[in-house]
Image (cartoon, rainbow, N blue to C red):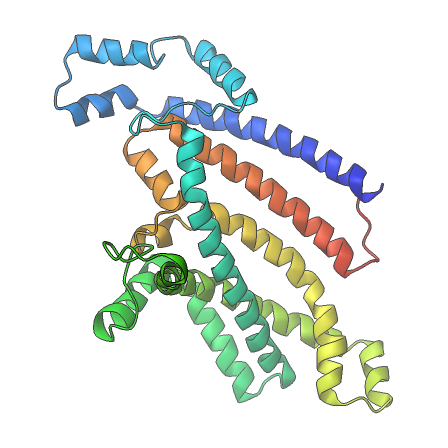
Length: 324
């Protein structure tokens, strides 16, 4: 199977996965007690029977479940994710407005986690059982075990409140009206704390995985042959050990990337980062079902595409791996 055929097959699978996500999410949300009309009536300040009835009729909530599901599937097939109950805006436009913020934060966190994890893992694998190995292992276990929301509050307290080095929340300084490079720099400063909070958790996994992979590769015959040829230890570590140890990291990085897209809800809410995570939280609180369903659909498509990119990258890193 060539690469184009494989991509086509995986895109069909992505469509089927998306359909399954829509069906399950729609049914689970409808099974929850209450509905959006109750929430909207509460926000309006009154909830008499006539007003509730009109709301349900306006949004089609008074129709049988199968009719609601069919109408929603037909709309999704045409690229229409519906209208947000609370925001009264198209769901797709609301998500696309927030999605770049989440992708930017996740890309920064993933880059820091990979770079830091490989560096720490290399230090630990250089001399297994040494003090450096023990320190890296201890830090990895510590950051892996600490809850992300607690770690976020701690870094905010230290670096934003006590030291006043970095802004505590948001994506940019309110009222500053920066433009161009000044605005980019302001956004970058606001991204450091939430990005590091996400990165430290995943960096621990990369450090441990890199350490294990490098120790295993170091015992292979081709590494011993390279040493016997007189190649320096640094070149052996970089060109032979680390290069081959990166193969399992590619798979893990793809999985981490897909998890980050939909898994940064806590961190985004702690730092008031205006991304898809905070949007999902707002949709749950407001019982904004179309918006919540739209987030599920978009993130499921992104996860499938990330997994596809991971498989292709894996085959490029290791030519022995065939797509199929």
